[in-house]
Structures are given as C-alpha cells and as structure tokens.
Image 1 (cartoon, one colour):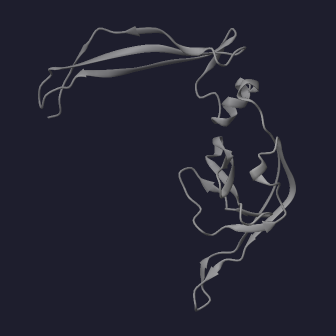
Image 2: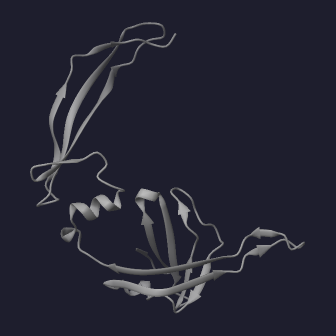
Image 3: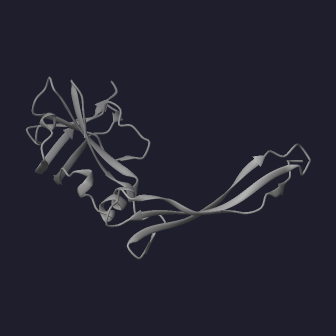
Length: 184
C-alpha cells in the first residue's frame, strides 16, 4: 500500500498472471474508493476508474487487516457525441481478506508467491538454491577480428529457509577466458 498526504493506493496483484487491480482513495473524499479494471504488467489505468462509496476500509489509517466483501464499483463509460463508445462501461466486484505482516514473519512460500513462484530455486536441505551461470565479456571483439575475450561462470544463490535474512551467493567458479569474435 502506498500512502501520501493526499492519496492512498492499494495494489492487489497476481504475479503468475502478470495482472493487477489498483484501489485508490483521496483524503479529500473519505469513503470513496476508485478501482481500475484488471491491468497487465507495465500498463496504466488512465482516468477511467470505477467508484463506490463506503465499500472498502479507510486506507489512510493503515489498518492491520483489510477485509471487505461485496465491493461493487461502477464506471459509467464515456461516449462520443454520436453516442458511440469511447470507453466502455464496466464494473469491479471484489472481496479481500488481507493481513499486514512484518517482513520478519514472512515465509519462503509467501515471498515466492509474490514473485510468481520459486523461479528456478530448488530446496537443498534447509535452503532454497538457484544454480546460475552466464558469461561476461572482458575484452570486446574488434570488427571481423577474434581478439575479444569472454569468461563463463557458475554461481549458486541461496536462501536459508529458517532465516530468510541469511542469503547470498557462493560456489563461484569461472572458466578460462575464451576467444570472442567480432561481427562481420
């Protein structure tokens, strides 16, 4: 939730689906909550927001729980002078039961759910481990020459499941530099 002096916005997202709904309130309009339609990642809702009165808790008090049922916001749509549709009408219906938690109380499952899944991590004993690799160009190759160098590497990223603040990288290995050829 984002709160400043004039507005408060709650974003409810589904990372696996890459979609979200934003709920917003203005301090000058207590009780009025705006909601946009379901938006994909990196998209913005614009000015076409559905609204309802006294349908959600006050976001400005940063409550420990946010719960509602029967949230039903309506956007009447906008029309051109000839009555053709500019932005179609829509309704947002939702329910929520959210609990504010300290970052220290979060579990791996909760954090990975926010990220859309374990993203390649696998459990090894009491840790989640990601084996990663790649290469770094250390000397760029010249045009039509094989005078560049590239180094391949492997590294493990780990997170201790009993203490999520215990994380890092280890087992770094690098190959010998390999020749890299420039474009023709």
